[in-house]
Amino acid sequence: MPRNPFQYGSPVGAEHFVGRAHELKALTSRMADGINVVLISPRRYGKTSLLRRAEDQLSGAAIVHVDVLLCASSAELAARLAGAAFRLPSGRWHRAKNAVPEFLHRLKVTPTVTLGPDGSPQFGFGGDLAPRELDQVLEDVYSLLAEDAPRRPGVLVLDEFQAITDLDEHLPSLLKGLADSYRRVSLILAGSQRHLMERLTGSSGAPLYGMAEPLGLGPVETNAMVDYLRQRAAGAGKPMTPEVAGRLIEIAGPIPNDIQRLAYCAYEEADGAIGNDEVNQGMEEAASHSDATYADLFSGRSPGQRRVLRALAAQPRTEIFSAHFAREVQLANAASVRKAVDALAGTEFVARDGDAWKVADPFFRYWLTWIFGATACDD
Image (cartoon, rainbow, N blue to C red; front, side, top):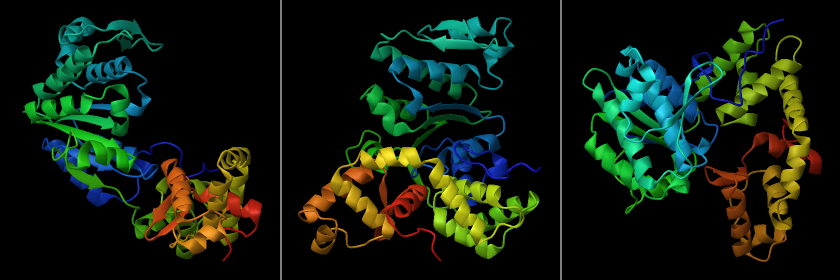
């Protein structure tokens, strides 16, 4: 039996990378030329997949990539930076007889070294790592990246950068100074929470204001996604028409991860060609798998927020801060609606789609209409 040709839930490799030719070209050229970039996109739009694809295309480049959200402390951030720097391809320390001691010689703050399950070195710093010591680790990493910059691109990628101030509030200002000092190294700051990223990089008075070129990610081009869905489905023996692919995108879009998830479920439901019935069945199956999770999420909101969610699940709405909508969801006034919507938007339950507000997760949206009445996928 052919394997399911669709993938979701994690960054995708080249086989599942769809569209984004313009963004990929823009990002790789700036990485190669030492230009700093702020990359902002909503969650699951493929930000990390784009970063990884750009890194793959920069053959031979020296790239340190760290997900800041995975770092619970400044010591862990320092350890991940050091580990990524040690793994740089063709690092000069690898040519020494004792690579680890030679690499440690390059760092002014010495980490502890243990061996991982595969025998590779793992670096660590004490939980009492002083701010100036983290500063030094960052500067050492910049210095290592700049070492070969005349011969190959040097790039520091900090993914989910909006979490940086949870570790140390002065780190954005430090990075600004380092970026100014090491102009041949490209600094890529990527984030999925626009308001936090704007506070750090985009607004006047922000610590990193004006030091990087902004690059935003929108939805993947519909034609490119239709072609991808059809090629993958046909290649695995269960073709779909352009109309079915377009409808699948309309139901699950615009987030690429959600489109791939619904395509995966529709493929599982199909015995032969994938049609509208299989798409509907796939949506129902995906929502039912998350029934307990969605029930907990819904019950954890306030009564007013739950009524707003039900209204927006029934259909996207534009005039939600009106007296009419407030009466519909049984809230006191427009200010009460705004408070509820702000809370839901802050936790990514709802989002704007053009001029309209809607439940952000299409599977949660389907679950809400499934539980409380109409069917989200009615033709």
